[in-house]
Length: 74
Image (tube, rainbow, N blue to C red; front, top):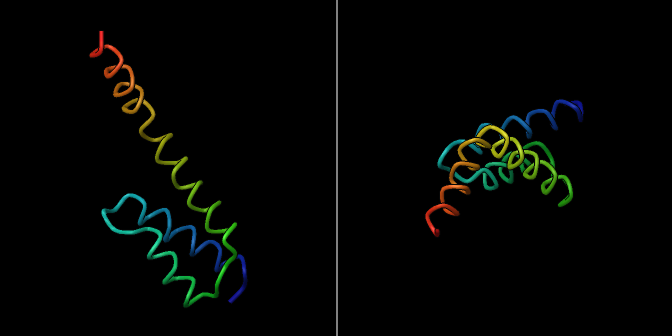
C-alpha cells in the first residue's frame, strides 16, 4: 500500500475518533500496528492537528466559556 494512502487512513481514523467518546490515541496505535509504525513526531503532529481542528470548530463556545468564567468572578 502506498505511503500516502497509509497516512491518509491514519488521519481519517484520528479525525473521526477525536469526536467520539473513545480513545483516538488507542485507535491510532492499533491502526499503526496494521499499517506500519510511524515516528513519535508523526503521532504528535497528527494529534495536534486534531486538537486544533476541534478548537477551531468550537472556538465560539470556548470563547463564551472563557469570558463567562471571567464575568462570573466579578
